[in-house]
Length: 147
Image (cartoon, rainbow, N blue to C red; front, side, top):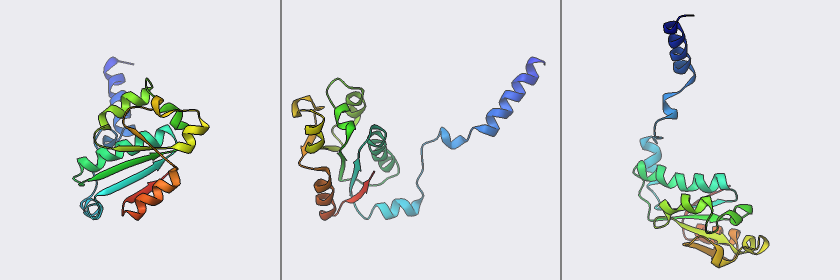
């Protein structure tokens, strides 16, 4: 097979199997953005690393699409709490959001996983329980989503 034919086959395969939107920023439609502008407070309850990162990335998505955010909070429970400690890879990931997003940590999970307040990444806030914090935020009018 000639080199040109190999190159052509690879190019065709890339065009067929890769979507352009994989590399592009997500764009929300105007109706969605308009609906989301009805509230400026958002909270997401998470219990694993993937959802924690996803909740922080959601902040970026909303901001990039023009959704005004006054308060944004991620409420964390479960085993991921043990990974939200100083020196962890999640500490580095969180630095970008530290001044923009409040992260509340379930004290019950902290106790079960033997994580002290001193061990938590700076800026994370312990709360009595995950479920009570979510209910409190809903009572305050936050748009809430839980995983």
